[in-house]
Amino acid sequence: EDQVTQSPEALRLQEGESSSLNCSYTVSGLRGLFWYRQDPGKGPEFLFTLYSAGEEKEKERLKATLTKKESFLHITAPKPEDSATYLCAVRISNYQLIWGAGTKLIIKP
Amino acid sequence: ETGVTQTPRHLVMGMTNKKSLKCEQHLGHNAMYWYKQSAKKPLELMFVYNFKEQTENNSVPSRFSPECPNSSHLFLHLHTLQPEDSALYLCASSQAGDINEKLFFGSGTQLSVL
Image (tube, rainbow over all chains, first blue to last red):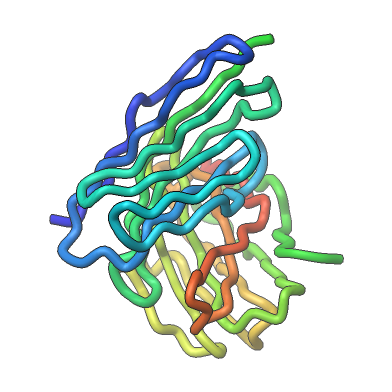
């Protein structure tokens, strides 16, 4: 069964304290792994797409990496404005994405 | 206006009511989606339209009825809903054929069924 699991469910960090969020997946055929950010009261906003093991993408304080079984979203020296829920999704067909339940990240000043 | 716009932002309805959710995209995309987001659960794909033709229907109960009159507008008609249908309903659009095929979401309609 295709499945995407994100951990931890919630993460509290001090401003400047680097950490990583995990997205592990079990799918029959990976056609792209996506990271989105969701702020309260808003829809998810696209961050990255990764297609093959070893691929990395960066944007400001965020870096996403991909292996054959999981993806990590590394956040370096986070700021309070990085607080959000981060969602991971895996594409399995033209229009189908399998989503994780998300990691709620809270950065305290 | 830019992006994906959803109305209303909040909706409270009784189980016998009929209401509709509206979505409009100003991005020139040709695919539109309805997703359901319940608290602490993964997003659930409900319907997909590509060039106004429905291409996906993920076993959604018939009390949810989608309508896509053109590639910029998408509706979700609701009738005789159940309390467990209370959730955030998100509309999204994408450019089918784009190698990234990233989704652009609206802010959602927070639905409460009493």
